[in-house]
Length: 192
Image (tube, rainbow, N blue to C red; front, top):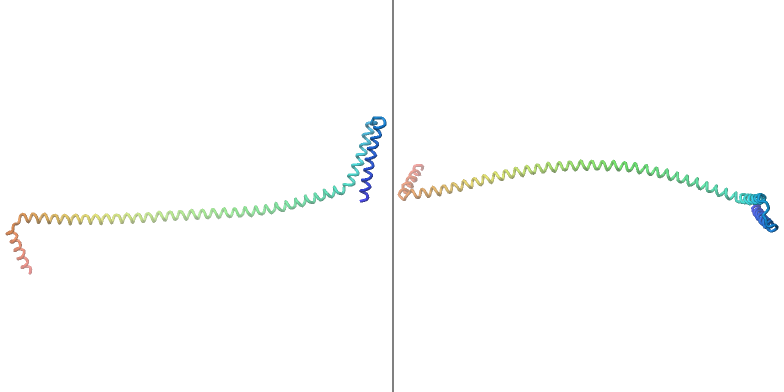
């Protein structure tokens, strides 16, 4: 610490001397002297001042840059570590994504196959049911047709019988009826 204090004091004195010498030169003759000498003197003063600053601040500047370099190295190391972790996580995520993609593809394929099977089964069942309905309809039509034919026949037989009865009634009188009844009774007696 003493060296720093002494160096600061010396630098202050040199600056003060330089300023007072500069002021004296101007005061005497009103001119600055030779420009070369003035430049050399100013350069020497600046060099001494700069040397003192470097001497006094050298350790702090070195310490500052060393600590900054260590911080930068630590940050680079941390960044590399984080980058490696991010790459590992990215690789895991990519593997997981690929596995999920394969699983989704498998599920889609299974679902499509199942849907196709169900659709084929539904179509097959619909065809069987339609065939049954057609057969039932045919049977119903046939039954209804036979029933209608029987009704028509029954109606025709009835009408024919009525017409025959009316014709017979119109052609047969009471004496002819008695003869037919007698003939019928004779035949019954023969059978018994």
